Amino acid sequence: MNFINCKLAFKTLKSGLPIIFPTDTLPAIGCLPKFSKIIYEFKKRDRNKPLILMGSEHKQLIDYVHESAKKDYQNIAARYWPGALTIVIPSSRKQTAILTSNDLTLGLRIPNSYIAQSLLKETGPLLTSSANISGRTGSSTAEGIALDFPSLQILGPIPWEKSSGKASTIIYWMKSGVWKLIRQGEVLVKELR
Picture 1 (cartoon, rainbow, N blue to C red):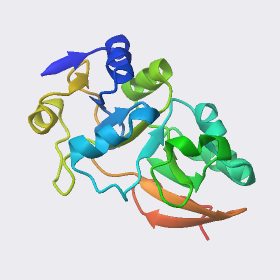
Picture 2 (spheres, one colour):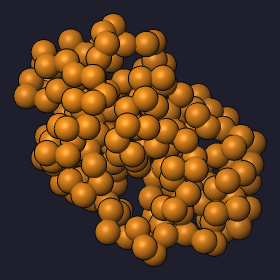
Picture 3 (cartoon, rainbow, N blue to C red):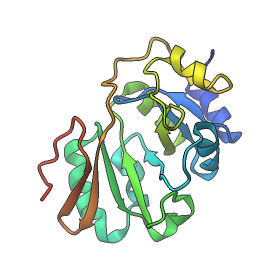
């Protein structure tokens, strides 16, 4: 296994390769936004399935949010992050180059994980997905993930902090003040109508 720290992870990411890191839900595979195609290749993921942009704090992601949704974004982010909630929201017009969706939206999340947040503070936001081959159940341990992705570097230290092993709740911004539940996870969002 190829274990690295945050500084070496940033070098790897700048070279265009993804890395594996723990989160509060499932382990993630992540890359710098301009290299998003690499995740699809490693995971054998359908290109029609968008990736999630993770950051270390909600202020780090605000510039990715369309002006029409910023107030709702800030309200939800302040209440539920860091945590197991993914917010799908219209993207800022100046950030459309990083989009992996077909509808000009972007999934955003701040994981409640010290290791993940340390990495994201060092690297800036990363486009991510769960660290598994598409269609297969992934491992929740670094050792298990290394079997699926033997050439990728894994963020240490090991063992990783405990995670839930469950996917995040996903909500979708419909219009001002209106959110739609896409997938129920551990987080119960009271603002859903």
